[in-house]
Image 1 (cartoon, protein in one colour):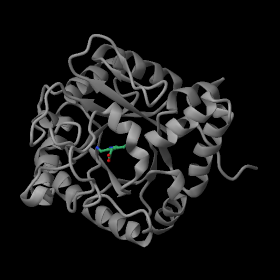
Image 2: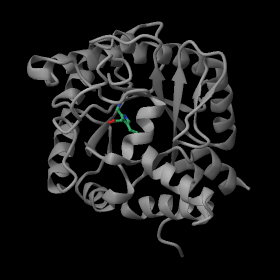
Image 3: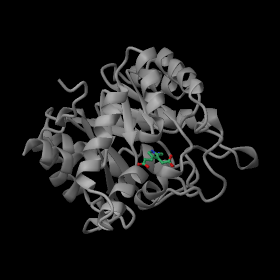
Length: 306
Ligand code: PBG
């Protein structure tokens, strides 16, 4: 009789893969999460596929960074290499999503190319996102997920994918991504903290919910196949509003800070971490999400399967 139910089918596992390391490196602020080598990534994705987790989303940590994030669109870049290897490992049994952004690849840590006055140049940036998308699709990605919140990014990516013959590749837009303090641990994991300023010129202002519908409408009109709200728990009202207003699948990103808060409180014995994890993810489903990107994917899948 439960109105909402969490199943393994709802989970997307975010994974980090780092160039130039011999062994996986733990992320201190995210207990249980590592920066993978190509080899350990392959094993992890095999385990996720065997558990029935339907999709993963990849974030790359390159060995070298520059002003325009060249590594992000390199055909032999860290994510492109991973995509080829994972396709070989799992075939069509698991959906491979690739985050399309520049912050992990730029020396300044911003999600775009820097123009005048230390601000991100929106239009130069979406050209880069389009190049990244094509290189990821060439390498075998099924879904391209632009996370930089630049205006026009979905349209630019859709056009570039179509021109390159990748008509069947889907776009998952991070449509309502807030300038949140909950991304802190991710910036350790992806080594992408901005070196100056912050991301408030491109990410959304937390007090705004109606604006999320505007942002989502633009992405859908530009060709987004799926949309996303991020973070999740503090924005359940936004998930519900987006679910009500649009007919495309809606995802929610249960972000690094949300994960780490559970782990830290559980480690102190202050909460039952396993129970809170299930409660949080089920609440995100109840709010209207069709799928949840969460670092809890593997452990929750193991529990739901047992
Ligand atoms: C940017 C990006 C970020 C996250 C996903 N994509 C970080 C940011 O905007 O600073 C955050 C994910 C998380 O906190 O788990 N490419």
